[in-house]
Image 1: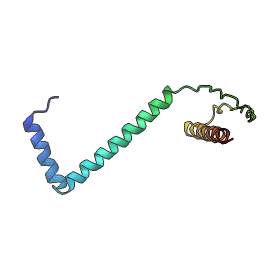
Image 2: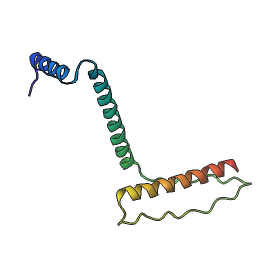
Image 3: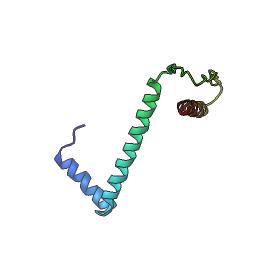
Image 4: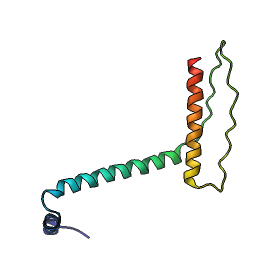
Length: 105
């Protein structure tokens, strides 16, 4: 379906008549924000799918004792996707906190 100049002009006139000239910039701004948010969220979902857990071994410092390895339980298969995501976020926060604590020592 190809839209030519007359069709586009007709659509613009209809929009001005429906919403008014003062409301169109606000409407366009709102649509733009919504599209940006949608694009950011979908790219985050794709990035999350692409990431694979990696094991990072910290170098042992002579004056600090290494922290015992933490067992990370696998999420239960009966949990919803949202619940699994929340558990993974909590585990990531705990790991970040322990890593920051190790750096301070």
